Length: 321
Ligand SMILES: C[S@@+](CC[C@H](N)C(=O)[O-])C[C@H]1O[C@@H](n2cnc3c(N)ncnc32)[C@H](O)[C@@H]1O
Image (cartoon, rainbow, N blue to C red):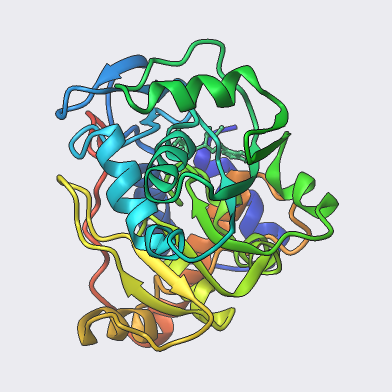
């Protein structure tokens, strides 16, 4: 269904009346957010020389084309998670992996953790909506571990590694998990505006329920909607540094204190964009979550009298008009 029709239906359903200017504001920004971030689909070479895939529906690469796939796994997930330091002392680490994708994050993590502590037991719980048929290989030494994961699907227990992948919508499958206390969460959905079902307050709340008290949640995103949801859930936030053209990611812990710059905290506290995606019953369509979010942003902007919008980042040949 056309975007403007969906927006009209949403407004009617919620009894919200907007002037055409506000209606157009919303429509324009939604169109920019939904615009593909890259052209093409299928296997793509990153600027670091390794490979990833561009998803045909999300029109987005599984890994950063500028930072490189392996580098992103290391710099945006494994290192900020603190697991490398903890691996020296722990007997067993538990990783919750949201968005298994090509399995790169996990293959890189297993290899690096085992390089530090060869006897370390590693327990992994992974969520994935759709498994790909063909996955480009990783450079060694990671390919060995990637093969181990793919050959062992949907799970295995071998040589101190316990791996279980729950296939299907993570919002449904997460309800089945009774006990898991993650030391680290690799939260790696597609970007929040295109894949909001994995970034809502309500889904993040479920994820939080599967973390140990000192667990660390990491992701490549610095989205205000996600950071605000994490704050509302009681997390303390820090940035993870930029890699390639990728902006700083987010690290969230239940202990410690916020370590974001004053400017970043100011945005979380005052920007109308800093409101969570809502999906109370974990069953909303992605477009519904996004429209609901953007309408609430517009209502806040109207109440606040304006705030600089974030710079649009999606520009693969999409017109904003
Ligand atoms: C950016 S990719 C993950 C890349 C992966 N971590 C890796 O290292 O190869 C995002 C993944 O999230 C999955 N995904 C999106 N929505 C989902 C949902 N509702 N439930 C489970 N998986 C989902 C996509 O199918 C995709 O594989």
